[in-house]
Image (cartoon, rainbow, N blue to C red; front, top):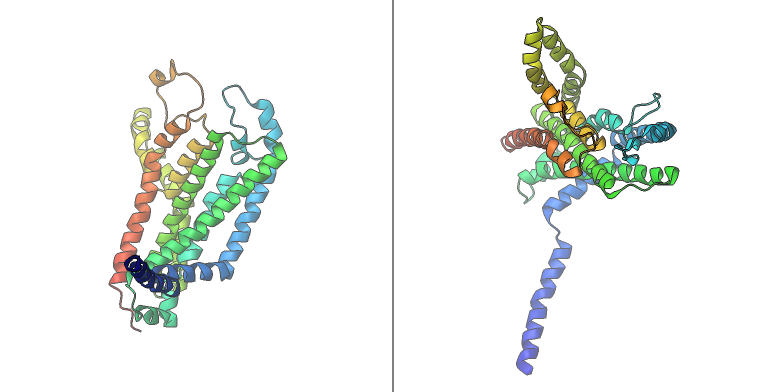
Length: 333
């Protein structure tokens, strides 16, 4: 019995210092993440964009509730996803919910990352952080993780708030399929905004001035959002003959899918509009004999898998380039 008591006391003596050390000295990576999250929360530009995104989402919800009665009257037997129309319909005064997310989401991602590195480099705080006994890659990893946490918390909060207000207003709860589609849409939105976060972080490493990195990120966003579709339309109009147009349809669609906004729009359409069964044109052989109806969630997810993989791949490519540039960057002023 004495031996067992000594062994137990010996184990307790070893375990107690370890537990105290874990509480006194938390992991340095999560310390950096907490610091970045607090900086984002206390940042005025991020708070302004969050308020703008919340106001626009509530405005789109109001317009959706105004037009939900017409949608309920015109609904048919094959389209029973009435709750999803809160995210897709509008009375014409404001765009729907997903359009605001696709428009303001990139601005939020750019605001979170355009001065992630160059601002600390200009202030001289980056060299102080690197001088601490922490791995150098913890810095850029913590900035990316903190931005993703802030974006995820914001989008899921707004999404669940829209769900709650929709249930209170129309009195109809979402079906399990509708709820999972909304969750999938929010996850897709996080992946879409994560691309712009990594792109802005890349420019913050490449350029020393925060204004230059911000303008570069906004220029890329404007190019893919506005001008890229114009360029692709000019290419499509260059095909004069009908045969040439038919042959170039697939090429035009693939060119459009280079734009991240196009990938997000296609994937959102499939998720929030289950009656949409394809993303491209159908031949007469495919139309004849097809049974009209909504796709199940598994088939919708399978259909948007290429778009989701493309967004994740673009995000990882930007992050990989940012990681390589940051690890080779001279920190000393």
